[in-house]
Length: 330
Ligand code: DGL
Image (cartoon, rainbow, N blue to C red; front, side, top):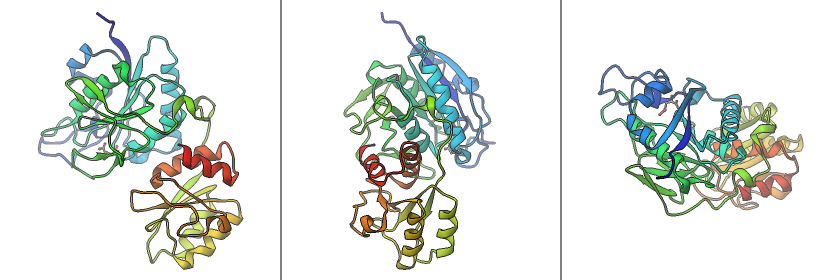
């Protein structure tokens, strides 16, 4: 018989730590109230999967997370994963921004040990809550040797997703998490089954280490619509080192906004064209002459993930060619 894995479980809040007044409250409830020990007490079965060591790092809804929260979660994970008696980790997290935290960890943790970020769409108190099974599945995935070397994973609704691709794509359904190229695998009765692995570089193969990051450059996002006004774009660009422009279609930009965005690039703000469509590649020099205007494009990163990637990229370089290559590699 092989020894059980030792898994660290870090609580940060969210619906998985939520509590409703009645079982019918699947969408209206208080978030981030149950401690991590209380949540784990709902799944005594998980102790058969792994030796668990739980700690409460944060107790807040993930819509409040700024860069300092990402750095704090990453640092704590890094120090746990460095310990010989920790084989993997699970982070309980609100679902609203789970894809951003997970992508940040995927790019900055320097370990092959499995890290699983997990949340739930319904609090433990609700009818047909997904909290207990999602957490049980997350522990099963983190404890399994086949999860090593895959980077940060997000587990929900019987599925295992890579942090790079997963997106919360529904506001209330249990089936909220999608990856545009498909999940990596399923979890069934405490057993992960993988069918593919992440193609893009992560964890040990990136230039970023959480252990040497103390702050992140300010990168903001502008969401495009026809009546978006020049003043709003100028105000956001004024305070940022990087700007993700969530353009229409293939990263397109209304004519009256070209000049403020060109001006931002001339002042050294790194302007990156993305798409508000939620899917697909933004083609460099396609809808706009990026070479001429000094702009960059995402590959397929959605705007919130592009924000994370550009912030990390700007800690390495401000050279446009280097930054563009980063969007195509991670
Ligand atoms: N307040 C939201 C958050 O923590 C709750 C959403 C959720 O966890 O499903 O992200």
